Length: 562
Figure 1 (cartoon, rainbow, N blue to C red):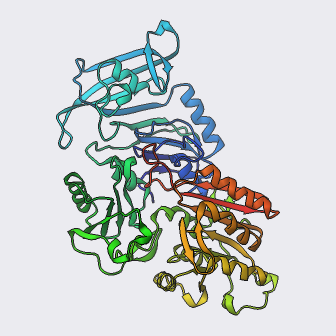
Figure 2 (figure 1 turned 45 degrees about the vertical axis):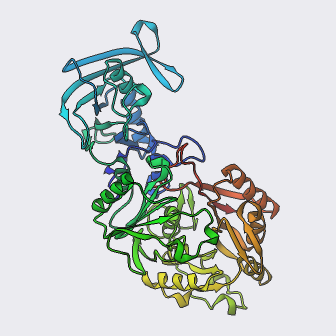
Figure 3 (figure 1 turned 120 degrees about the horizontal axis):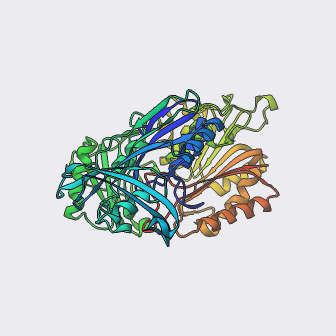
């Protein structure tokens, strides 16, 4: 169970939203908001409806409706102002009053709101405030802890009213607050009437303002019993420009173009303690990745014990072998975690299942169990129609993480990669998850060459996974650059998709705009005489937060083709 879930029944879902995540996505290619992330994660959350919102940097209780009945009931309660909410916040200013009420009209002025007298017109807003006491967060001076109860529910209401009384919230620089790690505002309690039982229901979410908000975000959205590999610091989006830290089970991997400074090293030590990790390494990032030998790219030990040559991590309940000594990547691309989960569960997004004839009412696997086949290289005959099961082709398979998830769900997989070493690594990943590698196909060779071979054999698949490197080079196909050669790759792959089949297309080419990538896909599909029946665009997961300072780089799309 996700730690962010406070309560769930047939009609309602109450969640403790982490600071640093929008309630809903601000744009089509921005990171998912909490609403989208939940809907795209579980079939039972596919019909969630937003009833109220919290600002991106505000944490705390938010309630979603799961049924039309709940939607109508909660909308009416919010409209009639029968819902009661309590917020707590920190300010580094001293309040002259223990309790007070602020009533005003709010008027939008650019990206912020301005408080005016009631007679001046605008949206009426009313908030009660009370001082709870003095607190001293770690390493800071004493601050005032306050509770605010909004009688009305206007955008930025508490923030504006607090600033108007000279009590700007710590971290709320938009309204004159002192700069801090986050906006120290938390929705601590919500009280409403249950839409079915009509009983008064209260949900609370305690907050520790001393906690690291970035770690809190990861902790609320990642199930620790299932996953112990994720990004801890994602550059400027987490306040550390140019610095990236990943957790891989019992070890931390830090990456930067330079050695760590004293402040970063101190932070890494705190992460080591927080995760009870055995050791932490640091890797110097080199822009000339292709010219860097694996030994030169290997990280060096900074803290604790060194990682063994190979070790195992958990992700979505599966196991994967990793190694810090294998050059630029360690064996698993963490930013594809949610997409691997989609292959594992078969649920891509609301209304989009990998096997549409199966039920999408649960999060269990919806793949049909395939009959084992002979190897692709030896297969000359087509199976009877009744014997055909879900088949997945994973091009550019690397260590076969996507293949493992599809196979665990019951699919018959074929994995292609230029490197036999990585395919052997992939076989070990299969074995780690009680999958027989000999029952699946591992093809060492050039993807373009094999796509042509499959075409000649009229071989088709139910799902094709395309996640090529931004740059690669082979004897058969020469140089591959994603922006220039993706269309050629699609032209070879699309004829291999059965009617109604699914294409997964991905690229981490940071300089390739999402709109242009999607245009490339659409043009290729139309050029192949196919139509797109369903489309789901999936950005990088929430532990890779997107911001102006740290723009999105990963672009992934799921397409069902007619």
